[in-house]
Length: 254
Image 1: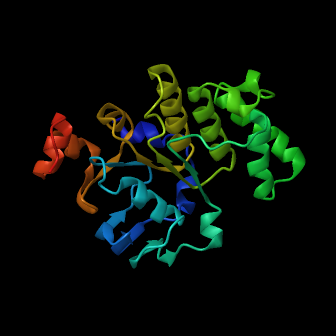
Image 2: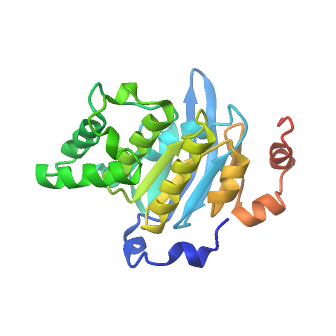
């Protein structure tokens, strides 16, 4: 984990406006008669990168979708700085999925379309598109059809599009799981730059090395329950549960 003080340099007052803490109370989600998220009580107040980890089927992606408001809980609630998610709060969030979701348009048009949906005027859209593509290393691909880009380039485009919205909270679901190391490194650099600019990042990853590099705190899920929530240094040095210890060893998690 990077030194917290170094992460906070140059942010100014951006953090003051973040909708934190995020409070989960009895959060439950059932699908097909199965309880996928099982009564989670959780408080997320870190202003930096929160990583959600756990074995396959633990409920990580479902939890992310609940937080982002893509699906509604069966029971329980999620509060953002003491208020439920509403349209205004939803507009302050963005999400990047595991598999790139792109329109049949150029790279630049994909970013511009998202900005247009947010009501950004054309002149400002042009500037934001150019800056987003530059940061993602895609400036030379502005006119390239998005769906002919490589997998790594497509995922960088998705992240560039999300960041162009200037969200307060950015959700990412395994954004580098199928990428080569070079593309994964670009994604990680973009995320570190985002959190330096005061964006709250909530990241699902199975990559322990990535979590060590990025996380300020770690939520560990198993069987739909939040088994642990610690600062990253404590979690990786001394996880409390046997399931987390097994996960970090690369063993079977029961």
